[in-house]
Length: 184
Image (cartoon, rainbow, N blue to C red):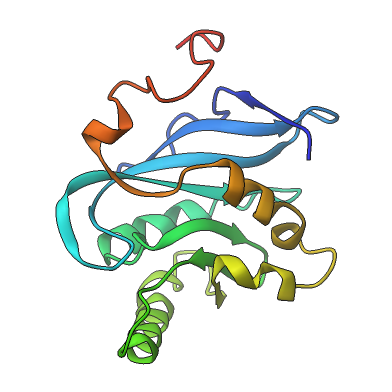
């Protein structure tokens, strides 16, 4: 996948989260994915922590479905977004790539987490979607032409996702190479 970093094409998408940058195809100029950041108090282990910054990606596919912004808002309000690293919305299905805690209560945690997503985040102003939650190591189980299978492993290996303390993010986007080139 040949991509380059560009300023985000959509500057305001929510009161709760904001775009950091788009990664676009060097061949077509079409956005492949966008990195977003949101204040977050939960870690990937679903435990309370100090207020931090969560980074996650929305993977675009052809005509972007901006209804995903309402879904993400609902997930943030419902404390569901912290284990999510990537999201993709198709006309019928929301697929999230999330790392849930492992351990003796993992099955119960997974069941409750998926049920809360289905009840809280997937019934929006526009419609409802089927939920598909996968772990990062399950992308190979998708259909061969699925955009998550094609691009997901590369994105997961290239980007830093999760909830970070603000100190770790170096304030004011100093952690992101090339911002001066982009006019930031």
